[in-house]
Length: 304
Image (cartoon, rainbow, N blue to C red; front, side, top):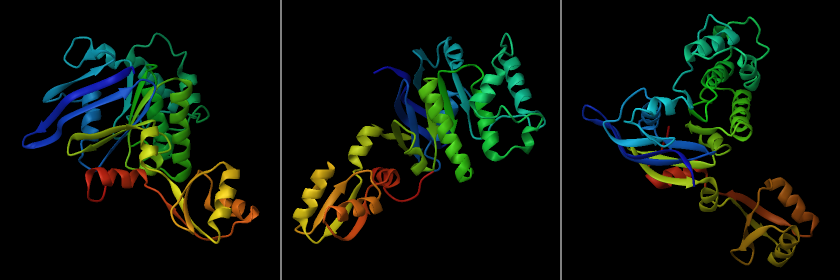
């Protein structure tokens, strides 16, 4: 597997506090890599190191084959765009003026790609409206547009849906998926909204106490967090026949109960079973969410 970013034994000390304590990670090319951790776990510190905003106390990371202490690291970082903490935008400028400003900072030869970047993030029709009057979701998308100005291969987003309303969250999710699938951009996301992260990420890194507790792919996580419906029925044989007809995976756990593994809603599943002559007495969802999986890894409660 090809990796765009790897880290080995990364440490970052602030006097007596270790923000990162020997952290290692591997981000596959083309992935959406979700960083999961509590407040103070080290997620933002890691992002700041990779972005070149801070230097590690010890350890190393390799970005596109270049070590962080090599001369070519700044050139490697040009292949990366980042929105760290809050978007860096000029409130008194329009969306287009903000993008043009970034083009000049990067020394781009022309403004030919400005309108395409705005179209990509859905801000092509904002006209003369100043960025300070944008909604939070629009500001977040403008921040991503600015990060896209150098046509990066890697995009790093720190809490991209934080504070957004449901519609803003959906728009951000669709944008991230679009960038990943259509532009083949590798994306690293730090987010405390784990339910939303689970709809995006192809890989996860679980961080606690400045260390990487576990790295796992979405497929591996899904296998570890089996979602199921525990159904109690009047006739287990009827249930088995019905589920076989529906080609749904299940495990019989007693003479009246079975765990059913499928993506179907509870209402639809009960209806389908009733149509096949199987009456459901009771049903309850039994699954391990991303959040509960994280808690089981690190112990305790709460996360960032």
